[in-house]
Image 1 (tube, rainbow, N blue to C red):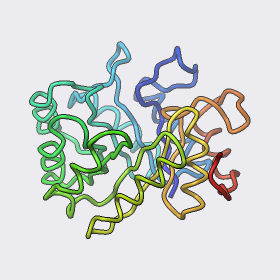
Image 2 (cartoon, rainbow, N blue to C red):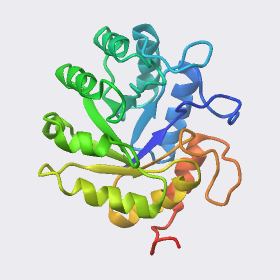
Image 3 (tube, rainbow, N blue to C red):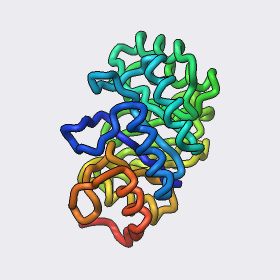
Image 4 (cartoon, helix red, strand yellow):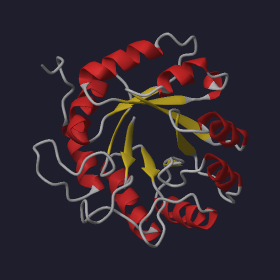
Length: 237
């Protein structure tokens, strides 16, 4: 499974192709799915370019993307969109339209309450477990863990990724894992995910560069490059 992450916390200053409006996100999603992406992840944006959990913005974003693609569409619920855990939970509970999936970073305050609210309204939760935080340990202790359908394992190197994946095997509940890294770790961890048979992702949220180091012109170009990549054979030195 290949997920495309259209924008993340980036803006046009990071790469001209970062989609910011619902229309631009829908166009980027359509091109990325046509290139081979199986799923879309997006950060809805305010007119000023900030991440938001606004019910109106979310509804407009989902409507535009769903009119362009038929694959599952997921959104962020991170502190970049709302740092206060109480207001963040209230925002999610006020949504009038639900995404198919939503990421919940388990190291962020209020993660369990947020995940419970999402699951109760039928949204599939992707538990983001970041290497170097207390998120993985908190998740493994959580009573919600059996209800979470997928884990997103984030690491900064291949070695750290393998250690994180090993820690996750201590959970009695098996679930799909999507492995990823950002910036310089994006392509090495993509290849590792492929070698291990795990779900993977690419997109301008994680990297603005193609595997050869040249700037990516679009999310679709990153997807095409990802599908041409070979799995890594060994760990990097």
